[in-house]
Image (tube, rainbow, N blue to C red; front, side, top):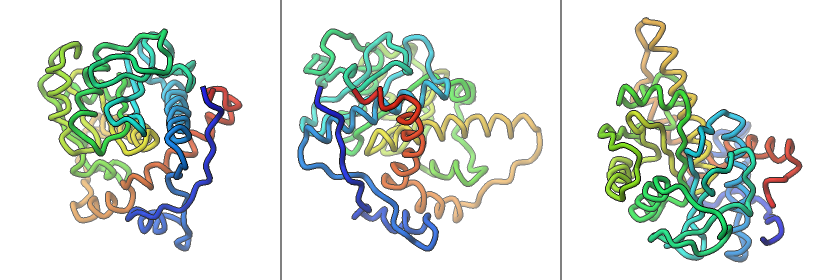
Length: 281
C-alpha cells in the first residue's frame, strides 16, 4: 500500500464553483475536489476517503451484519472498481482492506485474500456499467431508509435539505429479494436512471456520486431525510411543501458534485481526528 495520499485542495474550476461561492460568506471560494499528478496518487486518495466514509457510516449506525457496501471506480481502469471485503465491520475498515474487481467479478488487486458480497457485486457492477459518470456508489440497510422504503414513495420536498434530491431520486418498487442475480442489479440500475439516489422498496437506500465523498454525504442526508419524513408523517398534520421553484433553486445551489464533496469534509476530518488517521493505511 502506497503512503497516505496528499494533495492541495484548490477552488473548483467547474460550473459548481459559482454555487460554492454563493454558499460561502461574501462569496469567498471554498476548496474543491483536488487534482492529482498520477493515477496512483488519486487511487490512494480515493481509498482513504472510501475508508473514511465507512467510519462515518459506522458512527451513524448503518452497519447491519454483513450487509452494506461502498464502491469506487478505479481512476485508471474504467472497467474496475474497489469495494469493501465481506464480513468486516464498517468501523474497522482501512484503505488497505479494499478489494479491486473487474466488471466480471474477477479480483484484480488490493486485498486479494478477502471476499466480496455477491449481492453487492451485482448491484454495483450493473450501475458502473450503465453510468460512466458515476464513480462511487453507497448502499446500506440503514434504519430509517428501510422504514421509509416500505411505503415505496419518493421523499417530499418538506425542508431545505431534502431539496438536494429534487427530481433526482427514484423508487425501485419491484422488490426481487437478495440481489444475487445479475438481473436484479440491472433492474436497480435502470430504476436509478440518471439520478443521484434510489429508494429500494423493502430494502434500503442507494446513492451515487462523482466522488465517494459526494455519494456518502448524499447517503447520510437521504437517511436523515427519511427520518424527518417519518416524523412529519407521524404528526398527522398537513405538510407544507417547498415550491417547485424554490426546490429547483436549492438543488442548483447545493447539489453539485463540488458542493456535496465539500459538505462531506467536516465528517471526514472528524473521523480522521478521532482515529489519528488510522483508516488511511
